[in-house]
Length: 343
Length: 248
Figure 1: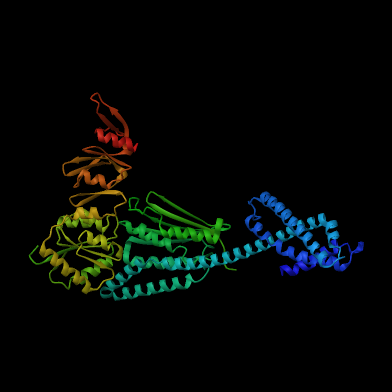
Figure 2: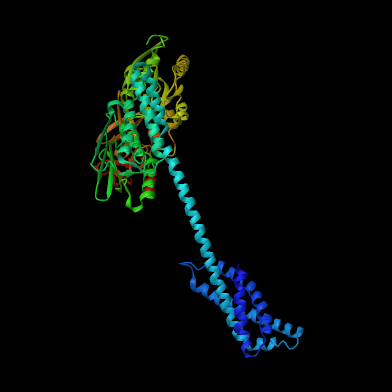
């Protein structure tokens, strides 16, 4: 394709510099300039190296690249002109009366200018090619990244269910089987419902806040079997918030933390309060629980909160926000995301 | 306790879990359940009062975890840990727990653990459990609080509440919140557990919380004294002064 593009260029050079109008023969012009142009097509490929080494990018050193191209074009063209001289001599020697040397001598400076311009033309073409390739690569990379992110998200969702929650629940069931068979059965059903909902909702992009809170409540009702009166739950949702859409299992790390790092460290337990309110354009969801200020702490923030922050950041960017606040034995996490309902 | 019988204290913060243990234990003729505790404080009290042979101990509990309970009750009862978490197993055997039951467990598995406990009681090993617990503590992180047992009661003192600690022979008197708490541990032991960036051994007999230091006074006899924010005066030895200067 590159060389096909050079055919019109060759004809153009032969026509423009051949001086056919001034009595030169068409054969002389064609025989002299056409091969010369094709040889130059090869020579100009050397521009590739220059383009590679001195990329034209925003923030790159463009003046330097331009200077390099000036020198490279002049050098290449000069080589071309001297090559042309040799070619003309060869033609004259082979075909006496061909008059190629005279033609070359007359058009030497113009040939040099054409050589420089052609070199730059090739350079521009190559830069475009490089930019095109780069954008294609960037596109593929972006696609790959979004696939990876989605996969990571799904994996994270599955990992959000702490296996110890299951072990403890199974132990409760084991305990209830002989003393209270109905309660054991109820616990099995709760657990199955919760796990099924997790799997089903985890595969969807968005669920309503009321579904999300139902799921959280189901989790807490399972934990209630274990913790008894130490765990109380309060749900306060402003009208209009229920229908807002949220990423599935967004609150799961929060309810889990509320139990594992909050309620379960307190002798008397307390109330996990889930609330939501809807402003003009934002939905605010808050999870609040009492906590023991002297509880043993991990040196780093937990993965649950970290995961929540990442999800909100990747899905909502600057429109989302997670605030964590602990004061005088209360732990509160507030999540703000754009209030969107299904059409 | 009558010979050949095993008195047991059950410690778990979850009612169903305690219920399950009680149910499984009724099948064993030689077992007497002498107490059921829903948290670490109750456990320490029950052990002090009832002197059980065996402790069935959950790890994750409010206020005091299973290991902290063990540190406080010392080498009295034999211990079987009962937990849903498998990541404490190595530590559990470091402190010479006879077994480590993973929830949920079967009656047979509990029976096996009880068998081991009986064997252990017969050999009547006496082990320095408190030391073992201390040495099994994850090494790198300095402790965040000091646990002190006062008969059946337990005081949990966050280390930033400590003013200073004074050596009293084999005990250490922890001065905090305007009171003095006696801990059965030497000052040298405590020193290794505390964050060296916050606590300095300023004297053979004193460890100081640097945050409480108000100023250092030079007395006529060329010895130095630390004046604390509440006005208390503590002697500083030569090496203690060098340590303090290095930190400040």
